[in-house]
Length: 364
Ligand code: 5AD
Ligand code: FES
Image 1 (cartoon, rainbow, N blue to C red):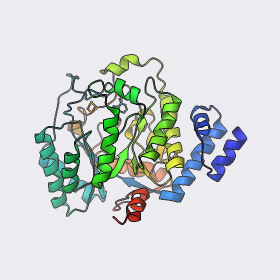
Image 2 (image 1 turned 90 degrees about the horizontal axis):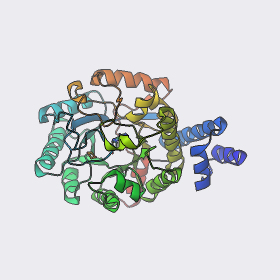
Image 3 (image 1 turned 45 degrees about the vertical axis):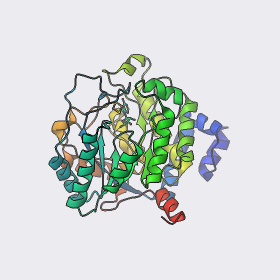
């Protein structure tokens, strides 16, 4: 098995489920390193050696949902809720533009009331106006109606990130007792695509109750849904959440390793998509995001949120970079990326080649 797998990895031959299971579980360092090397070569071939920055603005921790793993869930009464005022959001976007980021991500808890929907729509229009439409804006604002996706797209959002969290419908229901409908989440990804967005999804890796086969299904799900962007990372415990009580044998090194192997396998399996080295990786090792880059990721999201709001936006314990402002984050991540031998594609949108190909193919 080992020899055969080494050859497959070297030749970039298609991996089957048994191969993937083995590669996710093996303790063999040669195989592990061959997986990373193979994924990195695949990345170079399809998306190059540039890393794209997406400046992230976590503009509100108000949330109407009660996900069992998440620190800003509605039932958590220990945090102060905030929404960053409009002018500060636009200011952060302008800073990103002037810092040559070319692309930003607006993220918040999930809210579907008309005040929130209008607020986002206005923010998008204001950002468009203040930057002459120069920024590619991604939204990560949870599950919304088709109508809302359309309005936000028309107001200037080009990409949407909606994690499926897990492709296992039963596990999804357990994690989301307040809204357990997995099929609906899947349908939202279809709506997003039909609306014209570049569509991103992702999962949490190493959840209690999640099996290796679930993880393989996750990667197959990404391909089946023809996804353009992947944002996934290890599950991290937040002590004030119900899921924390279900975590018995939690090994940070194992979570990190599983996260990296999932990135590598996803790169090998999907080839030309954008994959983020998420902050969750850095919560587990100071160089976790660099390791993500070396495993096949090509996107990093420097935090633009003003430090005074960061305390209130902790989805999990041990979030890194709580005190570094946007300028410090830019410098720190630039050094980190350069240390991997890659360069940052400042000033470039960095649309996923996968998206470019699929839209060209149908003449959109
Ligand atoms: N550990 C890791 N990721 C988390 N997220 C939320 N809570 C956690 C946690 N405890 C992720 C979810 C969500 C994204 C915004 O953050 O996958 O979609
Ligand atoms: Fe806010 Fe899950 S707790 S979307």
